[in-house]
Image (cartoon, rainbow, N blue to C red):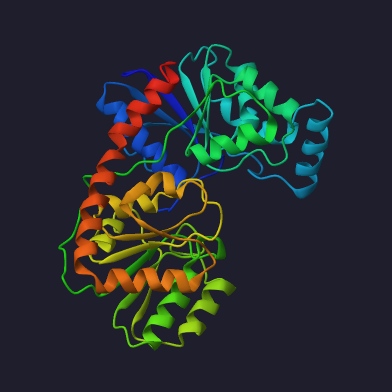
Length: 384
């Protein structure tokens, strides 16, 4: 993506493009599109018609709503079987064939395919002048064999992974040479996410994210309970829900967390907050925790906490250490006792929290979306 280029982003077909949802992909698309506009470029987003999208400064290209924007279990199985015999994933590709009909056939810019390796061949077939860039936010290739991956690599212009951990997983598991691939760690809006006042007496510990077993909120709750039983005084605030909007019902897991704390006054379940409300939640906290229990490729919440100048405890899973580096302290899930000890130390040690707060903001500024955009531009232009 050269400075000032036209480019087109394609989120998951059917996804709402709006700040009212908590989609990491939507956040990343909006940030990169904003940076491109500020550098003189034109940004377009391909979205399904009939939904209340926000253009957020970009041009929205709507495509007709398909009969459905998901695959059945049988269709997925047929696609996998066909791919293993050298064929194409025709059911998955059909979703993108439908969407790409709204793009002019002579489009010759970059097309960012977010989490959509199955769309690369479709772009090559229907938009031969375009440059398809696969943006891999997660492990996408569990059902992809080496042969299919090599065919993908021959069609794609570049593949961007959101962490080096994720990139190495791809190459190591498939014995594919590390060409046409690069890592660009996720960023943060350092203007929106700013440090709040530093308080000598730390009282609020914050979690932000999907409240699901993978994100590890239960580990933080259990660590907090250990500390409360020891007489430590602080407030735990859980921001998020199982879904990506405020209208999702409580899941069995969320109900279980509430029963675990049994109505304690020092726990607050805030539910889902949209992106505009998040900076204030960070600024009001004293300690931040990212207790991911899965191999998280690259959390968006960790850069947000760093930019907010929060002393932070992070899981060691996946790409998180690449994001936090030496600006955070770590624990290894599922060791709740380790997390409790780290939390106790931060709450008690004002000097350590002040030091980590300075490191956090400095690291957050390194991850500003302006720097992420420049790295993406260099990757696309072949400079890295």
